[in-house]
Image (tube, rainbow, N blue to C red):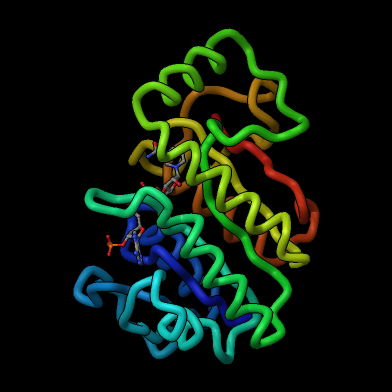
Amino acid sequence: MKRIALFGASGQTGQKFLTLALAKGYHVQALARDAAKIPQRSPQLTIVPGDVLDLNAVENTIRDTDLVVSLFGQVKGSPPDVQTRGTANIVKAMQHYGLRRIISLSGGGLPYAEDHPKLADKLIRGIMRLAVPQVLHDAQGHADVLRASGLDWQVVRGPRLTNEPARGQYRVGWVGVNASTSIGRADLANFILQQVESREFVHKMPFVSY
Ligand SMILES: NC(=O)c1ccc[n+]([C@@H]2O[C@H](COP(=O)([O-])OP(=O)(O)OC[C@H]3O[C@@H](n4cnc5c(N)ncnc54)[C@H](OP(=O)(O)O)[C@@H]3O)[C@@H](O)[C@H]2O)c1
């Protein structure tokens, strides 16, 4: 079974992903600023205390693992470039330990070549540019770091995230192509977990929605 280095395990999507990954038998090393925010207990789970902006803590999370799943992002009080700098640390640690594969999470505000944004998508991107420009800038910065890394990266993108129960069905497309405006975190986590064993979207940015 692969060993996963997980970032953002205490987050809403990260929690759902961690539960699914442990149930499937994966070993997980999860970085957490506050271990108490991770209620799961399992012999398959190691919690590494620390911050993604601390290279030492990131290296401790990645050592002895096979791939990275990065679900962390901006929270209240984050520096505006936390995802860019955190991802740069992850890439550095992956290169140090010889890991190749990273799956990262972002949103539909991050453009990709296959997108054909509809009017509604353009409106959403326009509103985000006005309301949360630093989030878009940081998403782009983290994607630039991954593209320049030479690693087998993949960015999973979602629209508005909800906490509804898993439907077990969703679409995988691009922004404006085979897509809608929401996805439940449970279904999103399910898709991300499937990517651990799949190379279909290496160097791509699929958009997952209902
Ligand atoms: N919200 C949406 O509608 C939406 C839509 C599309 C895409 N997305 C993307 O999906 C991601 C996940 O969403 P979510 O709602 O599951 O996120 P969330 O609940 O806000 O979780 C964010 C995670 O990032 C961690 N984190 C933040 N700064 C950190 C740092 N310096 N060091 C270590 N960990 C750090 C948080 O840890 P702590 O618990 O320690 O704070 C938490 O585990 C977002 O960040 C965004 O990129 C979101």
